[in-house]
Structures are given as C-alpha cells and as structure tokens.
Length: 301
Image 1 (cartoon, one colour):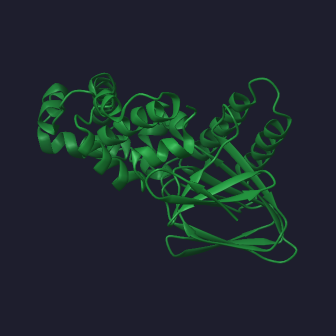
Image 2 (cartoon, helix red, strand yellow):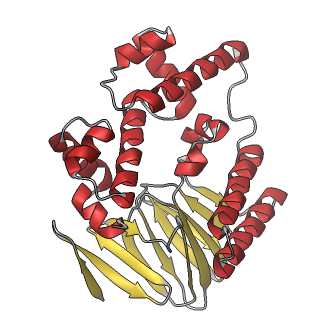
Image 3 (tube, one colour):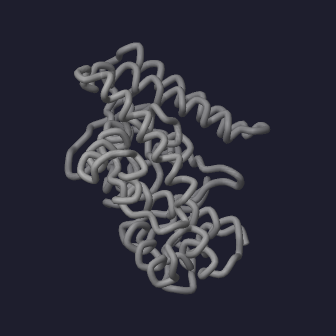
C-alpha cells in the first residue's frame, strides 16, 4: 500500500490495477479517470471492505456467487444477477465470498439530481434499492449497467456522457417501476402549485447563493409562511432549505477547488460562505476533510 501525502494530514492511497482508492478515516475519496466522474471496479477475488462512505452513488452488480453488504447496519445479500444501489454519503461495508465476482459502479450524482422530476423525489432515491424480483425493470436496469461498463471500457469519444445517458435511464426506470403510486394523490392541485413555487425558489437560490439568504427571506419570496415553506420545500426536494443552500455552495466550492488554483479566500467568497473560517468549518463537517486536502487529492492544478 502506498501513501498519498497532503498538506494538512495524510490520506491512505491503495494502488490497484485499475486505479486508486483514497481513504481518510472512514471517508473514501473516489478517484476517477481524467475528464470523468465515473469509476468501475471489477473483482473476482474474495474481499472484505470495512465500513466507509463517500460522495458517490455505489451500485453493485453481482456476476457470480454473492456479495454481502451492510448499509446502515442492514444486511443485503446480493446474489448473481441482482443489483444493489447505495445512495451517497451512506456508511456501508461489503464482503465477497469465494467463487464470486462483481462490478462496482461509482459515480457522482450531481448531474442526475439537477433533473427536476428526480429532485422532486430525492427523499425516495436517498435510500438503498435491492433489485432482485426478476421484473422487466430489474432486467432492464441490469442491461443498462452492462452498457455503462461497455462504454467505460471502450472509452470512445464522449464516453463519460454516454455512460451518464444510461445512468439517467436507470433512474427513470427506478422512478417509473418502483416508485409509481408512492406519492400521495390527494390535494394534487395544491401540490402542483407548491411544486412550481419550489422550483422557482430553487432557481432563485441557484442564482443568489453568494448572498446572505435566510429562511425568512426565501419564504417571503415564495409567498409562504416560514413554517409552510420549510415543510413544502422538504417535501418537494428531500432537503431542508439550509441543507440545500449548503450543498449548492459546497458544489460550487468543490468545482473551484478542482478546476482552479484560486486562493481559499476567493473560493470561500465566490461560493457564498463569506469567510475562510466558516468555509473550512462547514467543508470539514460535510466532506470529512479540509478544502486544502480536497484540492490536493482531486485538483487538476
């Protein structure tokens, strides 16, 4: 095992034939091929990976035998042909038995979660899915994962986008097959109106995240009371207003850390945190490392 040094602490980096795993405590920082945000690992060697979490969605497709996952202390035995989808930032461990093989698909879900219908059902996507019923949808999702694998291995022009086109279809299939009827049908007109308003609010936040946005200010913009806005925003997006704003600012900050060498003060202000101290504190709380460590691991500069 090799070690990857960063300026503030160290992260352990283990080299494998098809890439690196970078681990700091129980937080894994998924490394991706150049110009992509998808990583696929194949293994047919018995293996145990201790409890960890990461910002990526993780999907396992068992090809032979069985892979056992513990996700939030719940056991999932994923047998040949079955699929398990683990949402981001969810503690999990896995064990693969002798004679088994599997593909692990890891990808960042930011692009997927910008889709309005996916975003409106975020609370349902933020839980594990164990697909084992042999239904048409289950088979379709398995086929789509193999398409992602094929595009990943060939790496033709625009292969990352080709992979994400299949991932989008996986989410669409999940929503159509496994979530149909899950949302209440009562008070449809009122809920549709709320949805339109919350969509406008999200656009407002995306355009004004650099400013000091309070719950009261945004509720007033929506024309709702503070309490009703909080409840409606959570129902429509799966996030509290505070968490959504924080995630938006973190996404902007992470992009700046990866793609630029701008000073931390500029990154903090540009992403809406206001001060370096607040930026460092929130980043460490949410991502498990400092912005400097994150840039050292992922930065292209």
